[in-house]
Length: 330
Image (cartoon, rainbow, N blue to C red; front, side, top):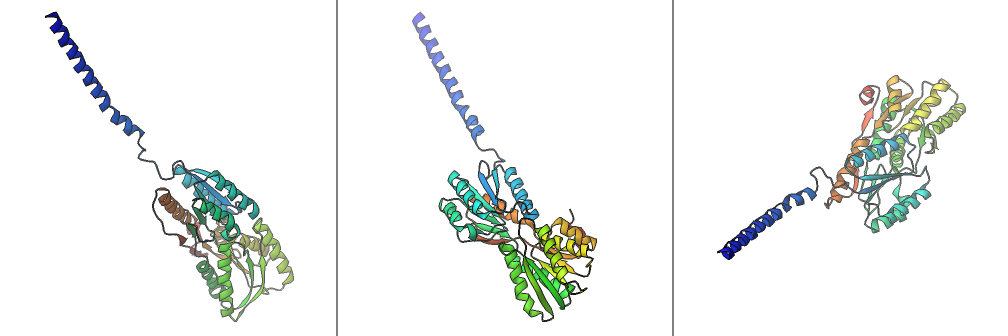
């Protein structure tokens, strides 16, 4: 009888242990759920994105880089901002560096990719997606998010020639043709000028990118000394806002309030000068956050394994004059 009781006790203990083991196995599922990705994770989480430009000193380039850095960081990406202070040879070398380091994406901001084609192709051949913001586009890149720079050039030049100049007078052009966006605006200027027989070009002057406000101011001061008569200069077309600010300052210092100045970008200082009733009469506001939104959407899709449409993609731009300048003041 004692043996039977002992055997029954052993069987009871075995059943109990088996039940406990089953309970432990069942508890493994919640542990696996804990290891699953959090609901708020994004395709950017853990990705390293190299944001690269030679022009971080530019107000608008700095603004775009800031928007991009903020949005990428908010989505969990590690952002490496690289500025080469107007030196394309250094930029080419840094692209090689981030390619060798295995960055997950390159975003080129305000730079002509044709000047960096060999290095960008190495990156693309290594499977690194390359994006542009207000840059050009070469085959193999994913997307260049920008404004329709030719259309913006048409918009500001038509406003200058028709509404401000009335089809008559002389004009100075301040340009920077190494920048792909400025080139397209200047091409619109070049194409429209012959259609206005009453308007003549005094000169086109290249404005370096390092200190565009100061350099434009110096250039215009010299041009005003060479054209001292009132109304000898009717207008100054500027490929972007910083030279327009410098040109306005030169006109104000010379007391030449009759000269009309226009630019492109929607720079806050430029908008303020328009609102104040200075020589600066109009600009075209680029939608920089809209450009960043395009890049964020397409990069997120790529990181998530989805296909995207490649090529140039445009954010809408808006003409700013004295009538609506207040709406664009931040």
